Amino acid sequence: MRLVMENKPSLHTSLSPALLHLYDLSSSIVVIIDVFRATSTIASALYNGARCVIPVDSVPKAIEISRNIDGIAAGERDGKLAEGLSHGNSPLEYQREFIENKTLVLTTTNGTRLLHMALERGADTIISGSFPNLSAVCQYLVAQKKNVVLGCAGWKDRFNLEDTLFAGAVISQVKKHFTIHCDSSLMAEAMYAKHKNNLAGFAPKLTHYHRLVERFGLIEDINFCLTPDGANVLPVYKEGKLVVEQANS
Image (cartoon, rainbow, N blue to C red; front, side, top):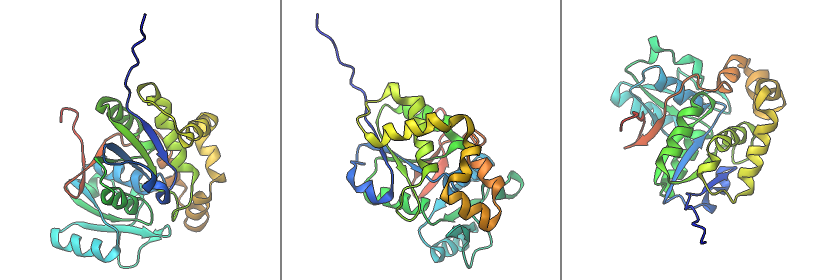
């Protein structure tokens, strides 16, 4: 009797933007992961009714675009409000009464930069993910049946744990649908399995936690960013904008 091998798509995890060039993005869905805080903020804004989020790689560009379209220029550098902007990168800042039916033009130190790197490398599809939209990301990846690269934004090309933990959370939910021969993915899943029941308790050990909490007191931001499905929409990059992917589209 011959065994029929099921042909599953592949899944890889890029632990840093500096490693992204090692992966073939041309036939892959790339998940941009910047848990603290860009992709959490994107999910929050879209969940609360933003028309779209335009990710850009510089503050002057954010200001210029927002002026031209009457949008909201926002972002950070090194964790703090970027000079020249009046709105930052906190997911809690974009409540429905503020952001509904508006366009957010966002620039951040790591996450929006990684998105533009994926674009330049010819990614087939780009979505953004964080714990607040964990389920939406996992459901989409399973349904699409395409190769996946989980792209961790890290911190200025350095590895960080919170993005890797989210990659592990995704892998733990979708792994039976993918072929995974990738040590970084195995490590991410193992790390998540060890800490999944107490992410908030583990967070104070993370270096970016100290940047955000000890310097700026952003503990509520951190708690939101680590809570699954608090803003469970799927941001998909289309024609220069991150928009909510509708279930029937």
